[in-house]
Image 1 (cartoon, rainbow, N blue to C red):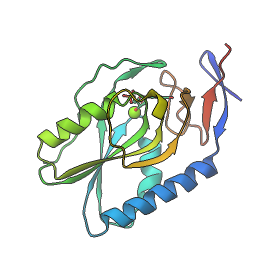
Image 2: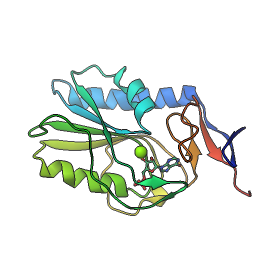
Image 3: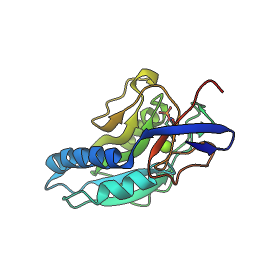
Length: 178
Ligand code: IMP
Ligand code: MG
C-alpha cells in the first residue's frame, strides 16, 4: 500500500502485466503501420512513461512529439478542454497516433481529434494505456487500448493524483471508504 497526499492506494496492476499488455498493443501497431511513417503525439504529462516503453517495441519508422493538454484537476475531470500545444511540425497528410495515459470521460480525446483533422492530417488513431469504459461520456473510436479498468481512480506508471505519484512502476488504485 502507498500513500499519495491525503489518500491511500493499493496495488492494482503489476508492472509485468503492464509490460505484457503494452507488448500486445505494440504488436497491433506494428501490423497496422508497417511501411507507414506515422507521427506519435504523446500527451503530457501522464503519457510520458507509457510512450517511452511503447516506442521501444515499435518496428516501423515513426517520429514522436510531446504535446500538452491539461483538462484534469484533482480527482474529477473538469471537462474544460484546452488547445493542444507544443506540436512543431506541419501535420498535413500525416498519419497521427495519439498516445494517451488514460481515457476517462473521453472529453480530452474527443476534442483533440477534430483539432487534428482540421490541420489536414491523413489519419488519427488513439493508442491509450488505460480506459474506463463505464465513465465514457462521448462517442469515441479507440482503436488501440492496452487495458480496460473499472471506474476507479488510479496512480502510478505516469498517472498522478494532484501532481504526485507518477514514479511508481506499478499502478495503484485508491482505497475507498476513506
Ligand atoms: P478525460 O478527458 O475525462 O478522458 O480525462 C483524461 C485525462 O484525465 C487523462 O489524460 C488523465 O490525465 C486524467 N485521468 C483520468 N482518470 C485518471 C485516473 O484514474 N488517475 C489519474 N489521472 C486520470
Ligand atoms: Mg493525460
